[in-house]
Image (cartoon, rainbow, N blue to C red; front, side, top):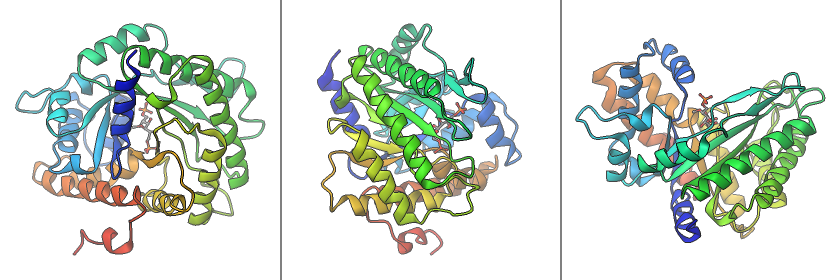
Length: 344
Ligand code: 5MM
């Protein structure tokens, strides 16, 4: 394992002003997104949509890397250039989702464990040969009555750590994603408690599996009340509680934290990241704080495109605008004027 190389890649993934584009939807999830805009879930439509995203002019100014799916990493632009090569040409590091999905956890009704460890060493080697330089694995933690259980938290943290160790062995930077779902009516205090516990257990397992903290990126959810909670969280409270949770749990050697959006609106996700970076300026935090959004980056591009060829350029502009707003937020410099720049 070349720790120096892994550290440099991890640092590049969270370089100041840059974040990660998550476009690793599995075929069923991609199908749901395409169906919402009236597009068939065919391989060629998935390819065309991903080409639109990756060839957005100027995307590399704000996006350090993009997470692909197994099908996507093997696809090419219409001119025959493989996606990973097209990304490298644009200064975007290719990444790959390597988990095989969250499945029912036996003995724990209503809870999930993410699978994909069997054969992972061989798959990682192939992905590296195809051009990937980082990977992603997402664990799903549900808040509910008597949930999450200790069994669920331990199983997911252990799997994430085993995955991360295999990634580093294969010279790939692991993104570790312990997502605490936004679904439910829980309070922000409950979300804080669960997220803190999930992240503490994760870093303990990473330590026990000999994972180098300097060669990984954490992809957490933000700390906020459930989407059905009567009392929704104020943006500055979300920023404050999320930072408090990170300070309690994340070792200083980790180069960066790249948040998921988790069902927040585009602007909410940007505003929360911005406030965190503004508050962080007074704290001298050891890690970069940036984004690794899927829905909150792609939504506006997808709904502009709707499968129409003559909308490609407009959809790309919409994606670039969201990437630019989030880049500004990763520096604590996002504002209303920038948000409305597009319309002008
Ligand atoms: C792109 O969505 C990813 C999950 O896809 P599957 O459910 O099809 O496996 C997801 O892991 C995503 O990368 C992150 O959770 C961030 O997505 P959001 O939309 O929450 O920013």
